[in-house]
Each structure stands twice: as structure tokens, then as C-alpha cells.
Length: 454
Image (cartoon, rainbow, N blue to C red; front, top):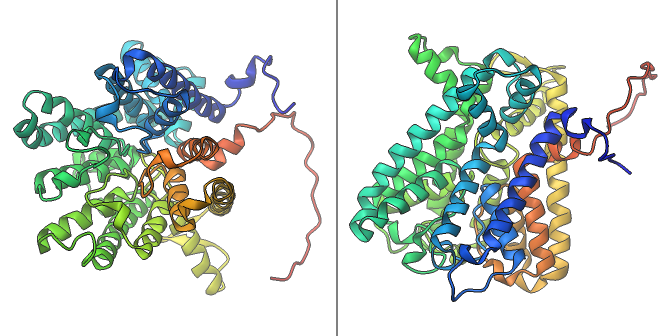
């Protein structure tokens, strides 16, 4: 047995394991709630697999939809999905920590360590301040986003438009990719709003801010409050901001060029730009679309798969292997080529343990994706290899771009996609650490060096 579930310290002794199991708990609770007859409309039938698939998609802020959110689920079901998106986007540990801070104002050392592992913060002294900022930033962004979206939604749907605006705002900030736009037609996402600049800009801005990460936003706010120039940002935040804007520009130009005379053909030049920005932002990793993704070219699928695989930033609501990982690996390659012994970014040395972790994350992610592709190909080869690759990367990166409706996947393939969404949300390394068995420290043995040729 890998685990001893009777061990009292099974969860308490491992903060990473606690975070991973919290997501499993949320997913299962959400699935059972969605399986209740009150959660879906009377003229629709729902299997437990579809409920589990939807719950996982919402909790892991992916955006894959087994059923159209608007037409299939009742108001109760929609509220369950909305809560799953909010809790999943920030994490159950984040919510419980915020609750303790505001109603008890005391956190034990164990809770501080657990909270810090949720948002990847090393300094325990900053945890309480950061969590307060997280709540303030989240509520502010989602409220402002809902107000801006309400101008367009309420024109079309009256009072119900406010609920749709709130739903879309929370889903965009949490990078979830689920929406209620099925009121136009099933699984249309934001295609009906592709000529609405306000909606395009608002959703893109919410997605981008949610993907930046709480730590970076908190640092920017603190520097601005103390009237300190942004050039004094930490290396982490510099990488996050540089990488985010760089990939946004590359993604926008790439999508614009590749789809200029394809899915963007009927739009004006400004509309083509706004839609390219929208889909470039969504690729990292909200999963909203403003064009018909069933018609995008194979080259575009390949291009977007790379963006999805990279994802956005640590400590945010997005998925992927993160920008920091890619920049660390690229910097390491350049340092090796220049015959330098240390990886240096923005004039700072990167610890070798971090470089090793980035390499492990990169190759472990590729391995998981490769195995998933082989499995799904075995069960759903008729879908086509390029569509399977795109769907697998989309699930693992918790993006939720869909070129094939989920109903065409077999039950076993859906189970694989559920696993990918979960692992992509908690992180491959965190998932692996969940199985780590705590052993008593043994005396370290100094191993002899070995000269290997590369």
C-alpha cells in the first residue's frame, strides 16, 4: 500500500496533499449536486459521468462543457457551477484561509504553511496580507467586469442580463471558460459578441488579470502605494509581466495572420484585431472563443496548442506549465550555450533546485500528454489525431478550447480528460508529491561522482 489512510497525519503532514484532496472533495460534491434532479431542466437527462465531467471542468476552471450550460442546467445547477468556478479558481484552501482571517484573525503555523502552499508564497509573514489582497482584488475585478458586461447583456435580456454578466465576469476572471451564451444557440461561447468591443475588451482584461497572479498584482499595488517605480519589482513579477505581454502580442499576431482569411474573414480590420486579442488571451487559459473553432486551420490548432501548453502565470487562476517555467528553461539553454555554470535572469541567479523543478515539470507534462493522446486515440481514433492532440492539451492546460463536442468522446476518454483537467489544475509535480510517503530521515550517503558524456 502506498498510503496508510488510518494514519492520522495522512493529510495533516503534507500541505500539498491537503490541497490536492481539497480539489477532489469539491469535484465530487459538485458532481453529486449536479446529479440531483433539481440541477437540470425537466426535459433533459443527465448521466453521472456528465455531471462529474462538468464539475471537474468548473472546479479546475477548464471550460469543457459536456452539456450546454444555459439550456441544460436549471437555475440551481447554474448556481452550483458558478460556485464551483469561484471556489475552484481561488482554491478551497484560499476560501477557508480568508474565512479564518476575517472571522478569527488567527492562523496557526500549520494553517500558514497550508495557505502558502496554495498560492506558492515562501514568506509566511506575508500570507495574511496577500490573502486579504486576493479577496479585495477578486471582488473588485469581478464586480467591475459584471457592471461593464451588464451594458451589453441587459440590452438583450433585461434583468436576467445581470445574472449573465456576473456569471461571465466570474468565469472570465477565474479563467473558467463556461458561459450562459447558449441562450443564442448551443455552445456558441462569445461568437454572438464578436462585434461588441466592450464585451471583447472586458472578457480579455478579466482573463489577463486573473492569469497574472495574485502575488504580482499585490506587489504592483504595494509599490504604487509607496510611490516606488515598477523597475524595482521582484524577478518573479518581471518575468510574469514580460512573459504575459510578450505571449499576448505573439498570440494576437499569430491568430490574426493564420485566421485572417478564414474564421476572421467576414469581420472588419478592427474587429479582426479585437477578436485576435480575445482568442490569444483565452488561449492562456480561459477557453472562451469568439469564432467558430470547428473551422480553424490545423496550423492554428498547433499554434494555439503551444500557447495553451505554456499557459499563464503561477499564483493565478490559469493552467499550463506557466511562463516562469518556459523562461527558466530557455534561459538555462542560453547559459549552457554560453558555457556559463548558473542560470541568470534579469541579473539574478536562479537556484539549481528551481531549474531542476522546471525541467521536471516540463518533461513530466509532456509525458502525461503523450500517454493521454495514445489512450484516447485507441478509443476515439475516428476523431482525428490533430483534434485529439488539441483536446488533450486543452484539458491538461485547463483551457477548455473545444474543436470536438464532448459527446463524441467515449466514457473512458472522458475519464482521461477528467484526469487531465485535475492534474493540470493541481499541477503534475503536486500530484506526484501527493503519493509521497513520509519516511524517517536517514543519514545521507555521499555518492561518488560519475562523468557522463552528452
